[in-house]
Image 1 (cartoon, rainbow, N blue to C red):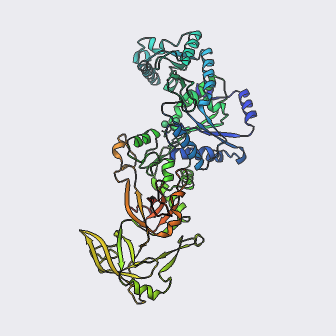
Image 2 (image 1 turned 60 degrees about the horizontal axis):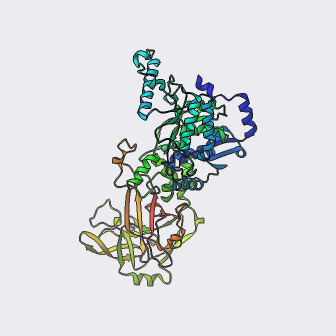
Image 3 (image 1 turned 30 degrees about the horizontal axis):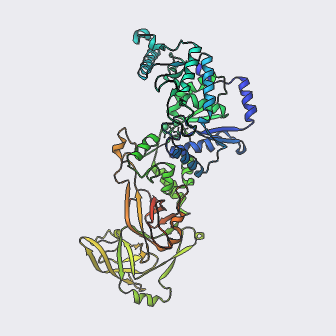
Length: 585
Ligand code: ATP
Ligand code: MG
Ligand code: MG
C-alpha cells in the first residue's frame, strides 16, 4: 500500500510533466558499459525503441528514446565498452533522441543526496560490510516471522540497537552533512563510510532495508574523470536519472521487480516526477549465456576469440558471424514481450536467419576438404565443346533471377569435397565411388573414376573420365566442385557454445569442445573474387554474405587479410547458419 502511495505523482507534478513533455512519450535504454551488448539487449532495444510505443499506440512523431550509459561503477567500466555500446546500437539501426550518461548527473545526484540528509531521510553509516549483512539478515528473519503471524521478538530477537536499526540511524543532520562532505573531499578511506537511505526495516522487501546510496571509491571514472571519490549506486541513480530525463515508461527486466519500491521511495522522498515502471522477462537463449559477467569470463579465460567471437551471443559476435540487423531485430520482434520466464530455442534465431538470407545472398561452390580430380579426357571434351564451351552461367540466386548470374569454368583439374567420394561401394551412398559415376553440378557430365591415388589411408587424388555422351547413365547425384583457379580459404563452422541447453552453475565445464570446427584448406569458386577482398572487411558493419551450395550461409570474417590484386593473404569464412535444420557438416 505504501509502495502505491510512493508511486503516485501529485497533480502538480503531473501537470508539470505534461507541460514539459507536451504529447511526447519517452522511454530509455540504459546499459552499463561493463561489457559488450548481447542479444538480450537487442530485445530490450526493440522494446524501448519500437514495441512499447506500438503497444501504447503512440504515433511515430511522438516517440522518443534516450540512450543512457548507466555508468556508476568505475571498476567495471571502460572506454572500449562505451565505444562498442554506441556502435552496436547504431548498427542495429536505432536512433536515440539523445545520448546521456548517468555520470553527467553526479553533481545533481550529490545535491539531491544532501537534500535527503537535510530532510532526515539519509545518514552516513560506519557499519562494516559484515555488520550490514547481519543487520539485513536479522531484519529479514523478523519480517518472515511477522508474515506468518509469529512474534519477531521471540523468533529473531534484536541483540543490540547497534545492529538494528543500527548505531548511525538516529544521528544528527549536522553530523551527516559534515561526514558526507568529508567523504566527498577524500578524507576517509574506502569502506569506512557509506551514505544510507532511511527507509524501512519492517518492510517485507529487503531492498527497503536502508539501501546504500553512496560508497567511497578511489577509482577514476571512465567518463566523469578524476573528480569523484564517492559514487552513487544503481538504485539511487537510476530513478533520479529517469525522472530528470522525463522518462514516461521505465522498462526493465523482472529481477528488478523488487527494486521498484526503493525506486518510488527515492523519488517520493525527493518529491520528483515518477515514471511508470514496467518489468519484462529477460531473454534467455538455449545453449548460451546472456550475462555480461559470464561472457567476460569466457573472454578472460580465452575460451573464445574475444567479445566478438562468432560463437558469442553478443551483437558484435553475431555480426561477425553474418547475422544482420534485420535478422536480429526480426527475431526480437518475434520473441515479443511477456512476463513469462522462458528459454527461447536457438533454432528460432537460425530460422529467421535462413529466411532472411535465402533471397538475398548469391551462391558459390566451395569444397571444405578438397580431393584433387584430374580429368583424363579433358582436352578431347574441350575440343568437342568448342570455344567457351566449358564455361557455364549460374543464376546467383536459385529463386530470384534479378540477382543476376556468374559463370563457372570447368578445368582439367577440379576439386571435389572428400565427403563426395568413398572407396567402399554402398547402395545408400549416391555420390562417387570407384564403380559409381557422379554428375558434376552445372556441367551435365558424369565423372567416372579411373584411378585412386592414396597417401596412406587418405585419398589424395582421383583420375577420372568425363562422360558427356547423350546416352550416358543418369547419375544418382550431382556434386559441387571448384576449378583449378579456385581461391584457398579457411572455413569455420560453428556449433553451440555449450553442450547444455540451459547451462548450469557449472557452466564453465559445459563448454562445447566442438563449438568451432576449422577447415584450413578449403577452396572457393573464383567467381567470388570481386567480393572478398580485405578492403571490404569492417568490424562494425555487416560483411559480404554468400551462400555456399550444400553447406549453408557464410560471411567473410573480419580477420581476413586476402588481397585480390596480389592474391595474397588469408581469406576466412564463418558459417552463419546451415541451409537446413540439424544439418551438421
Ligand atoms: P547483464 O547481466 O548481461 O550485464 P544487465 O541487465 O546487467 O545484464 P544492463 O547493461 O544493465 O545489463 O542492461 C541494459 C538494459 O538491457 C536493461 O534495461 C536490462 O533490463 C536489459 N537487458 C539486459 N539483459 C537482457 C535480457 N537478457 N533480456 C532482456 N533485456 C535485457
Ligand atoms: Mg544493469
Ligand atoms: Mg549486469
